[in-house]
Each structure stands twice: as C-alpha cells, then as structure tokens.
Image (cartoon, rainbow, N blue to C red):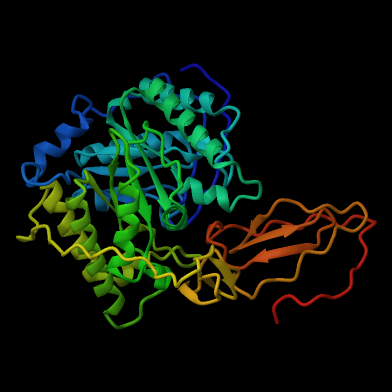
Length: 468
C-alpha cells in the first residue's frame, strides 16, 4: 500500500434540520469491497423490488435524515434503521467512515444519500469554497477506488440555502445564491453522473415569495426539494392550512424534473413530558404530510425522528420519549418499502386543508417578521400582529441586546464562534461583543473556545444595558 498525506477538514453545520461533518483525505488503494454490496442495482430497482405500494403510490422511498451521520448521538443508527427504509443519510468525521456506513446500509439493501454541504460551501453561507471541485474529485476517487459509487443514490447539497444566506453576516444577492447552487449541482452531475440532487428550504423564504410573488426558486439540476416547517415553531406552522400553504407555494415554483419530497415533522426540541399531546399532534401532522405527498406525486418521505437532540449527552427526544410516534413511523416506512411486516398498516389519507393567508385590511400590508424578545413576530403596517413564532431559535434568548460598542483603539470585532451552547462574538482584545444563547448553529457538545489574550491597548467602556 502506498502512503499519502491526508488533509483533515472537520466542519459542523447545524440548523433546524442538520449536523454535518466532513473529513477529506486520500483513498485507500488496496481497500476491499464488501461482497454483499448490491452495486448492480439502481435506486429504482431497490425500491420496486420491495415496495408494496409501487403500483399504487408515487411514494417509493423512505429515509431517516441523519441516521448515519457524525455528531448525533453515536452518529450511526443504521443498524437500527436499515431494516425499514431503503435510503440512509450519511456523513462521517473521516472519509473511511463513509465506507463503513455505505456497507452497513447495503447489508440492509439500501442506498445512501451523502451530506455534501461541507464539500461545497463556506461555513454558514452559500459561498462556494474555492476548492469545492477538488473536494468533489477527492470524494469520487474514494468512492470509485473502493467500489462504492453505485451505492450512492444522491447528495443532500445544502440546508435551507436562501434562508441561510439572509441570516449570513454578508448576504449574497438572490441571483448569486441561485448561480452558486446551480454551479455546485452542475459539477455534481458532471463528476458523479446521474444522481439525486436534494435540497430543503425554510418557511421564511416562502413567506416572502407569497407576499411579493418574487423568488428564483431552485435551478433545474435539483431533483428533490422540501420545505422545512415544524410544529415546535409555534403559530407559524400550527395548523394544516399554514403548512399546506408552504408546500403549495413550493410546488408552484417547480420546473421540469423537480419533485417535492416531504420532511416529516417528527421533531421536538424539548422533552414532551408525560402527556401524549405532542406525540398525537406529530402523528396527525405526519398524516397530513402523507396526504400532501400523494397529492403532489412525491417520490419520498424523510423522517426527522433522529434529529431531536436536546442536551450535551445528545439525548434523542424522538427515540427516547415518543414511543408511539416511533412505532408509527417505522410501520409507515414498511408500507412504502415493504421490507418487513407493517402489521396491516396502510398509508393514511387526510383531507387536504384549504389554503388561507392572513387577511390584510385595506391599506395595511404584512411586514417582514422581527424578533420581539424571545419571539419572531410579523406585524402589518397598521401595527397589528399577524402571526407569532414563540421562542423562535432565530431570536436571542434575551431581549435584544444593546448595540455593540465600537472597538476601542486597535480592537476589532471577530467572527462569531461557538462556545459551548452559545454563539459568541468577541473582539481581538478578548471582550465579548454579543452572545446568542443556546444558538442552534452550535453543537450541543462543542467545547468553549478560549478567549483571545487581551491586547495592551484595551480600554474599559461605559456600562450599557443588555437585556435585564
């Protein structure tokens, strides 16, 4: 075996829907391929060979987002999940870890979707990395060398790119976001051939589209597209009408070869307690999503049961506290994949709720949402509250802080960094400029970053109120 120098690049990307890890390195020339890998089967063959519903439903694929990724619990639940879905979502702290997860998925007869965001884009932006093409060729070399290429169904490109751009420190134009998404997907297709190109988008993007009628949507290279909005967001998505409105808005922007997929609302960000209220609501929302998937001829359902992480021990709320929901979702998966007996369960049909939008009175127009304390509040131009997202993770956990003081002398403000649960911006003198408590972009187990040593010319500023 020839030796090589490896380059490690480990990145966490966290949002309402994802944790992403990446290791880039040289591939193993002498690696052995597991003889059980179904390298000759296409994704369609995997679905149709098992599915009880292939002749009566468009829904042929089921997966659990992040069931084979680093940074969520043990990072790999494929041994538990692979018996019911037909696709697994994987990433790894090191490139060899991808191979072990591909093999684990293959033993269950499954293909994989590789989380690709950290190969393509800079941290928490939609700016293409200068070396993203090299990253993709490194990945292809590893997959080809080890005989894994045929087991890759596709790539999850980026999480909520338009919303991510709006919340970035230096947002790009919407056209540039579209262009970057297209360039990334075009390179994927050129390097890897015909694979699924998957993406999700957050509900605020559709709010803006519904109000203005303007949004570029996704380039035609993207095949599977979903909208993310969850019951834990409060009044934003608390009714069937509101959720249906967002899915319908996405459907109106699809072009040829694009399909809606549904990211199932099996997500909580806190322990639900002893009552079954949250569990029953999540099951009811899932039934609506199944009905929408059938209405819009969706090819896939992707459950977020393995995304409900709430503490430094990475306890998975969905698995540990929602046994009825877990049982329901596993049975649902089997009705799609046909891999094990589903106990006679059939796909439930729910009536599609009528689409409604908040009324606007006379000359009062709905404004953009803004943080008011813990909540994201949308008002109209007459001052009336149209909708409220209680305890929105995009809002600081304390009332809006006072404006950051101007850097003293040569102290300059630095980029925010995760310190434990919090996103903290410091200046070059070590002073804390601003803090986002319990920021969802920070891993629950991230170690506090050491404060930079104060510079000699740091001066004390006048006190200022920050919340209480």
